[in-house]
Length: 506
Image (cartoon, rainbow, N blue to C red; front, side, top):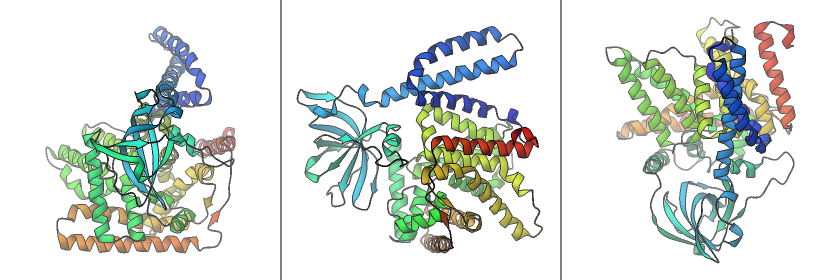
């Protein structure tokens, strides 16, 4: 039974998201947001001593939406290229710092630079913002996080989508404060030194490089290495495009992205192995500290990937609440984590990864158990298989409007493939995370490495077999934002119809 009073952060999240969407649809609304916020706060002060709960809720909703609208506008100002005191048309060179890890593409290396200064005809000027640069694989110097580069030439604006309905890469990068790109030749770059902007981020990339080298030693450079690297470290730069399409056709592309699912599997595995620590006087505290340490070490190992940070934050809140003896509902915790993320980065709301992750995890928390209890399977193996199938059905059904909108296709055999893919991918993940733990013992590391290779090979074969089934994927499927809204509205109506048994929702 759905009891929305148990999820106060869901209401806060909806109100906050409404303000972000309002600014996105009409940016000039921020001027009215000041007035709306002032009126709402005055009304709340006047209503504070009354029992007009409906009016208090309405004005509370408006005040929170106004705050989010203003914060989104402020964030956009810090991103906007028109507020950097720099006209890139006049730039002849610039100094920038290497940010993030390089990504290997088929023909180029992709890298992000943070602008520091720019040279114009009038001399050197301060500059800010990020630029994407592309280099040939034969580039003589391997980029390192924190390298200061002197770059010749000027970047150009990122191209808009060429076809209607195509993914708007320019808008996606704009939400991250990236508006320009440049292709670099070796003679156009001079390294001035290395000074990492963040010691913690530098440590994260060193941990990432260590984990990457460890996987290379035990898995080689084939498909198994590429897919384990994508699953554990979140980088898909070496994945075979044909095999990636097979994962998409099997409805299993989610296992290739470091996400809340991966952190959830790690959390459950650790809770099972370390559960004995909860006993004793200080057991609960020791268990919590150790679990938090391992979760955030994994986040560090992935280079603080955004999806892992979201999930680590959510599970950290769950662990902290349990340690303090506070009762909680996982969906309310998920909404609280999403609220905090949007508080610091409002544009995460428009990220496909954020939307799919929230819908999938929220759906599992709210509806998986109810679907699972519809049928009783007395055989233990059959019950386990039905539990996995129910999980796959819930996540795929709740995310299918977004999958169609972003990827223009829908896998038909997901219900058959996921009960096999989910446990196999879970085994791969646990083995891959366990490999660094046992890497100090050579014979154990070799054994775990062989098991990891075998599990990943089997997972790839299952995906290939699924793709070969007739009608494995429906495509092309193209829907507009308005049609997406209708689909989501129909889903919400279906949920309330099922729980309320009222024809008003039909």
